[in-house]
Image (cartoon, rainbow, N blue to C red; front, side):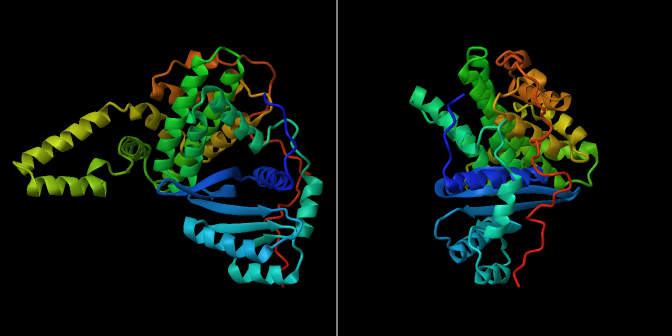
Length: 381
């Protein structure tokens, strides 16, 4: 593992907030790229996902700044704009600013403000996590792996999976995360057992697999009232075509077929041949392996719990081996490996068990029953 570097004040605040929200039941990710047409616009300091009830999901963004001269008003307006652009359910600004005017502006904008007083209390009850690496250290591992190879594949794979959480959370982000997870699973299997590269690749696999679970949890929330058989069908269609209703429901393909029928020579037969070829290619995607398993466990919060376990495992200081995960975690990852047509034993042998770690969520440093600062009523008056 790379030597730890002392984070700057801004990164340290983000890390404290990330673990605070995680310990209060959220799925929290730092440094999520916001992209438009492959252009990087900005990074979201912390992205939050919440599963309050079986049929509802909430996405929130956090803007955290620890500046000597706080500019809370500027950050509040910025955060509100990002919330609208991303169609997020809420925005939070963490600032050392303690001015009453900032609280009033936050109330006017509908943005939650964690001011200097609340941040001081939060820092007092949330010391740094010693058994986890920070998000900055995590990202540095993938940059170093690329630098060693003079490529950008490792960093690109992890950032693409994160960016999809913002751009298109659901089946689209699940498919992108699956692609990244397959890349890291293969890299872990190819690396020398117990090597540094094997451990970094395993971290990437766990994290991307967590995004798969989270994305499928969001996707299936829209289909929560379906039977297990119907859930499997919308999963099959989503994994193969990116749409719950399959190929024929995708607007671009419908338009292409209509144009072929209208303007192509022997348009009807040519359109039919085009459609059959697309469906034949889709049949090569063995989506049933994954969809059958996921449709069975999709009742309740199983996918969400699995996502939190795997993300937690990715950030443990001593990354756990496949065999030390929970039985549910191993089953989920095993089905994913079957979907990738990768032998399970190859991944299991990439990193040998060394120490036992809890993998059911990040350990909480908050006192039992400690309230979330986010849930406390703000004193904006």
